[in-house]
Image: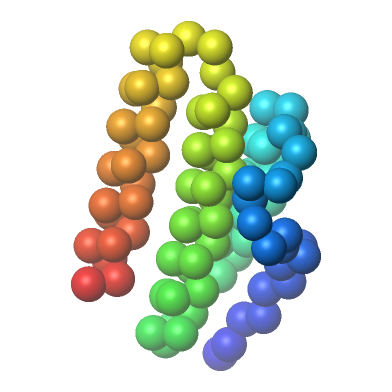
Length: 93
């Protein structure tokens, strides 16, 4: 069974996006991950959709990381974000 996911409209370039407050970023991530939780993986296409959502969630997480003042915390969270990307790519492979 194919699941249809409705995404919010995306801007052409993230460089021109206004800064979001951390709460807004985390709300976006939570909404994306809630969509993943409801999906059933029954086909390669559904797996690609889930990986796309996880990629998008990680983009929001990186935006959140960029707003953290503590360099140490920022580096630690960025390393975790990089690891998420690696896991997504391994799953795709």
